[in-house]
Amino acid sequence: MFEFGTFDGKTSANLAANLGTEADILTIDIEPTRWMRLPIGKKDLKFVQKERVGIKTSGVPNILQLYGDTARFDFSPWYGTRDLVFVDACHEYEYVRNDTEIAFRLSHPRGLIIWHDYGTWAGVTRAFKRLPLARPTLSSSQANSWNLDLLPRT
Image (tube, rainbow, N blue to C red; front, side, top):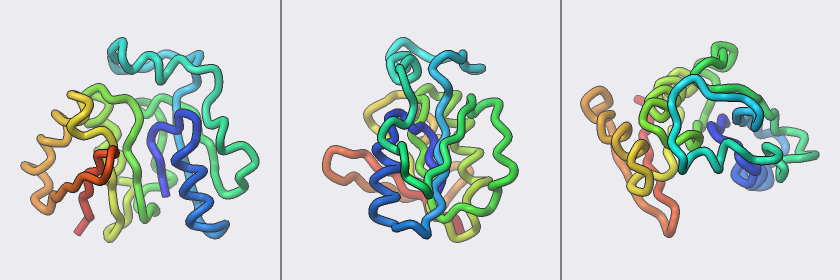
C-alpha cells in the first residue's frame, strides 16, 4: 500500500491495524520545514506547516515513513508494486495531477487507486474530472463523510 499525504498518520495506522503485520505500508509527506516545488494555496498550508509528520504511526513496524515533495521525489523503486494507492496529499490541482500520474506508476496492473476529497476540494475535483478522457474505466462512489473515488487499473 502507498499513501500520499501522511499528515498525522491516522490512515496508515488504521490500515496497518486492519491489514496485519504482513502488509507493507509506505507513506509520504513533506517535512514541515521544506517548501514545495509546485504552488499551493493558503488552505493547504495548515496541512504542510505542522509540528510533526506521522505522529500516529510511531512504533508501527510495517509502516515506512518517507519524506519529500512528491513533485521531486524518486518513486521509481516502487513502480508497479502497490496493490493499493491512496492519494490524499496536497489538494492543489497541479499536485493532484502529479500524484495521480505517480499513483498509476506505483500501482500494479490489478491495483486500486483511491482519491480522497473529491467534491470537497476544487483542485482534487478538477484533476479527477479530467481523468475520464484518458482513463475510460473510471467509476466513483461516496461513503459517509469521506469522498472516495475509485479507479481500478485494467
